[in-house]
Image (cartoon, rainbow, N blue to C red; front, side):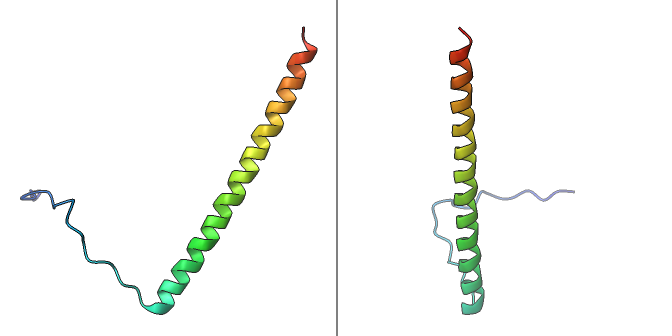
Length: 65
């Protein structure tokens, strides 16, 4: 049998921040930095790939009059 919640928690109340111990906070920040760098690199690679394909398609279309 499922329990029903009495009401939805107030979405506008600020919950207390989750405090991490200093070593865990440092590790989390380093991991976030690495994730950001990886996302930026992948974004750059993806945009370069799309640009290259667009250039080739434009060149192909000009040859087919």
